[in-house]
Image (tube, rainbow, N blue to C red):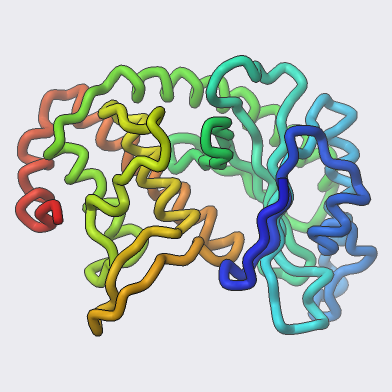
Length: 290
């Protein structure tokens, strides 16, 4: 499965099967860069991302998705930020979701090695990223990078088991229409602030019958898919009709995904504490459903 859009400022490739080095090199050449960008100094420890991935493979991790930020600077195209989503051989793939770890890196100084927890949802081929509930691991370009990344990946893998338990809790939390509207309004704020071109109804629309449920997990997924992938009809401030674009770039994708996860997790906490009425009323008043 290939997804690419010039408007999204990133190339994306995902497969149902583990990706080979050749495939990753084709869609994200910075993964197989043979040297650091010329802007890096002598203290910069250059370790090709592909070498790290090969080390992770030996520990049972396999890559299934690759993303690379597009740039007009020809000199940075083989060094720019990229993201690899990997799955451990122990991951259970018989459920609607599967735990993954996410590796971020660049060879131009725009990113250290960064590891975080993620979830891949099969029904809509959506990649979710855990927010501040689980700590990210950052590894500088110095020292024993490969060993440090492998150790970090093992720690993040443990976090993914906790995430799957958290998802089960989200599925058990039912939201009223007002509560769903409140979630949608907050999600719009995360993407566009006060100038959202679409309504809460638009961001919460279901794209398939399986996503019409009212639980927190399904509501979160509807908002996440519509915000990240785009394709929602709306109006510009001038009144011109438009269709929203996908989130551009690796950095923006990660930032929005983490923020949405944090929003869902905080809402779950509030809901479980039985203090949601005031929260929902606040957003329903500020952002009435359209």
